[in-house]
Amino acid sequence: MKGKFNALQIGFNNLKNEFSYDPKITWHFFDAETIERVHMHEQIQLLKKDVKAFDLILVEAPHSATIQSILTAFITPYNTVVDHAVWSDVYETYDVYKNNFVYYFNYDDQDERLNKLKAISHSGQYGDKLEPKDITVNPLFKGKVHYFGNKYLVLEDDFGSDFKQVATWKFNAYYEKHRATELWLEFVLEEDVAIEYAFRVTERTSGKLLYTFEVSGAALNEPVYLPYRPDDAHISISLRAKGTGIIKIGAIHRRWSRLEFGEFFMGGKRFSDDKRDEFIYYFHPGDMKPPLNVYFSGYRTAEGFEGFFMMNRFKAPFLLIGDPRIEGGAFYLGTEQYEQGIIDVIQTHLKLLNFSDKDLILSGLSMGSFGALYYGAQLKPSAVIVGKPLVSIGTVAHNIRLLRPTDFGTSLDVLLTNSGDLDKQAIDQLNQKFWQVFEHEDVSDVTFGISYMEDDDYDLYAYDELLKVLSRQHAKVMGRGIAGRHNDDSPTITNWFVNFYNMILQSKFGR
Image (cartoon, rainbow, N blue to C red; front, side, top):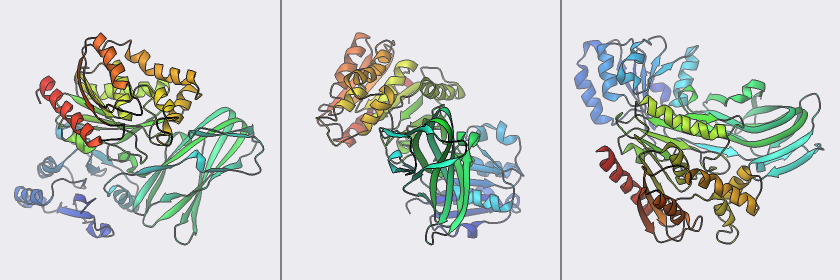
C-alpha cells in the first residue's frame, strides 16, 4: 500500500486501536511485561520478515539488554522516541542511539501523549503557501500599497496607536485531519510599526467557529504550531497593525508538522535569517564514512525535501538542503546571514562526522546546481556534481522576454529580490554575484561532474562559461551534453548525474 506507515510500540498498553482510523498505519506491539521472558531473537527475526523498516518506534519500558537488542535490529535515524518516564543516559552515550538521534518524548498528560503520537504517525511530507497576491487590503486603508513582485505586498502608513485590521487572506489555510499543522509567517517591518496575526479556526463542513487566537511580538519569531486534529478544519487569517512605518507582507507557509521531532521529515530542520528568509535541511548519517554528500533541491512548488531516496542509495552520509521561498525557490541566495547559515550547516555536519573539508561532495540539479557551484567555490569540496547548470541567474530572468515568454516567471522575482530592479544593470549585478565568487576562488583541486542541455533556453552558455574558468584553473571536469532545452530529457540528465556520483565515490573514496 502506497504511503504505508509501520510503527512498533514497546510498552504496557497496546495503542493499536487508537490508530485504526488510518488503514495505512500498521501498529506492532511488544508487551514490556513479557519480553524479558520470551525468545526475542526468534520474535525479531519473524518481524524482520514482515517489516522492512519501522517509521516509528515508541519505547515505554526501562532500558534493558532485551530492548537494546530490539532497537539494534530496527533502529534507523530519527525513528525512535523514548518516553520521558523511562529515559536514561544510555540514549545519549551508546553509539547505536547517538548515531541514530533517538528522541526524548515529553508530554504533560495522556491526551497530549496520544495526540503527539498521532500527529507524527503518517508517511510523506507536504507544504504549500498563501502568497502575497492572495491578500485583500482593507478598503478603508488610505496608505500606500504596492507589490514587490511576488515576494511582498507592501503597506506604508501611520496605522494608529491601537491594532487595526489592515489585510486579510482571500483563501483559508487547510487544517487537515489526523495532522498537526505548522505555519511560518514571512514579513519585514521597517520604522516604528508593530503587527499582529489573527487566526480563526472553523469546521470545514459546517463553518462553525471552533476557536480564535492571535500571535504577536516575540512569538512571531517562531513557527505557529496547531495541534493534531481528528477532523478537517479551515484557518482564516488576517493582519492587524499599529504604529508608523512600512510592512512588507510575504507568504504564509503551511506544512504538515512533526512537532518538535522535525520539519517535514522526522529529523528535518530549518534556518531563518533576520528577514525571515528560510532554508530547510535534513541530515542522514549513512554509514558514517566519507564523504558527506550534500544535495541542493531543485525548483519545487510543493514545499519539502527532494532527493532522499536517490541520496540514500549511496549509503554514505548525506545532507539535503531546500529553499522554500517565493514560488519554488530562490537559488539559495540571500543576506550574508542566510548564505553563511548554509555554509555553517555544512561545516557543522562535517565536524559532527569528524570529516575533513575534502570529505565533501556538493551536488544539485537545475536550481540546485547553482547552490552546489556557488557554495562549492567557497567550500572547495572534493567534488561538485551538477545537472542542467544555471549560473547567470540575471540572464535566466532576461531570457523570459523572448526565449521563455510564459515559463519560469520566478526568475524575475529572484532578480528583483536580489537586485532591486529588472533593468540591465540589475541583470548584470545578479550575474556577477555568482561570477565574483566563482572566478576568484581557487577550485583547481575540485573535480566537477557536469551534465548539461546543449540548447538550454534558461542559461545557454552556462557550461561554456564554467569550462573557461575551470580550464584556466586546471580543474578536472567530466562533462556530458544532451540535446534539448532546459526542461527536456530530465531522465538522461539524472542518469548521468548518478553515474558521475558513482564514479567519484569509487575513484576518490573507494566506495
